[in-house]
Image (cartoon, rainbow, N blue to C red; front, side, top):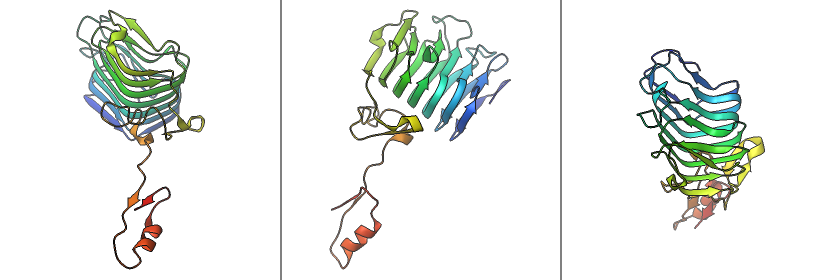
Length: 239
């Protein structure tokens, strides 16, 4: 995907991007307002899943980037995004990252938002990497309800950012994926990511949250128990 001009708002939802060099690459003349990814999966991306170099927009190649309920499996880097003027003290793009599952990162950081002070990262799992999760820039960037494993230091701090901008971070904790090596990031029972999100749900892409067991209540009547046994899914409960 390569937007090259004034793109307005781009919304990409329910897409699987597999075996590519870059997932989305925007730079130069790109001047979009908003770029939104939801319910997308990026797998085996040899370079950048999302690359947004300095562009023709007011603040950056886009003014607003949102990533929600997405999975990144074996990518060089999840996001590379640059502020147009390179000054964290001036107004820059807004970045919201929520409910991501990230497994396998080759770059020095999973999220590289250079000189962007308006970044929110939350409810996310990052594992299987020998790098930072993210460098925080400025005093307005926040990180909350994040679990990471196999990171080289967790977070870095630039432009006045400090560790006080982190909250509810679980460091070097196993998220307990079902079978990450084969692309199954379902959270197993007992995972520390379950029910750990700030919205009452679990960390990571919500598509990997195990469904609650089915419960069927048997009422009085002929053959009600038999009917319940015939209809209930494996793992369900009859009460």
